[in-house]
Image (cartoon, rainbow, N blue to C red):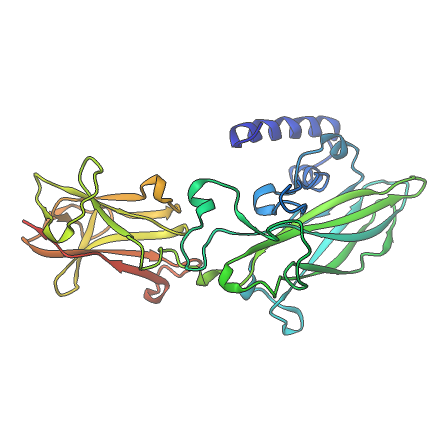
Length: 362
């Protein structure tokens, strides 16, 4: 079974079982044990592990978590915005992190090795910047590789490690340094999200086989701040609909009154921490916010979802939640403003904006 409604109680039950079996573990260590002992999920289309953006550390393996004799911290690596990372040697393609592996066996030493599995890279976008058909239709995201054939060098992430071949004494910890190289041969215009799994192999003295502990990592192949929050200008970004949700095709002929209001619908390609919908006059001056024209932490919307809507009734407010006042009859436009990813709310240059067609308020 799938879905968050299934996953949440399943994980809660797994954590309860793990806590019962290993009461000495802290909440953070319970999470580490559960993630590190998970099994990455294979994408049958590519033969590679599914991206951590979708699969996390993989499928829970509660038996392995209960029998675990090591803790790994951090349990995952979120590279996020590759362009704004600290790069060793000034190489913008490389990100460096440290990982600590603790041998919780108090009596036996463990031999450490490491190997790496690159996962699918995925994108949500078409080359023109619009959302892909897969996103719109709720289908599996477009991946690189797109199949099981061999791919050119540099189109998949790479991982190297310093200190990953050593013996960890009983009850001791070892800190290793990993360098993750993004898939530089994938064009940044494709807006690819990459990732993979760092697998630590630990074999304890006297054991016949090693145990695997995974650390998923993921990042964006480029400057995340450059992804537009608003759809391309070629799309019908700001749409007008009547109070029943029927599209208004001829916006130039639209006349809004208090008795005959309309609605403004807009969509977002990416989520944003702040979005505003204001009314501007013929001179381009903003007169105030439309009713419900302020929104914090606004989600991305798909065409099939109808977008976000605000009321257009000839009234505005000076601030987000202030008293609504009537505007004078005349010609107006709607202005949509959204904060860029990682933007500073106090910086005007950190906002994107679009202006609608002109209409009339009577």
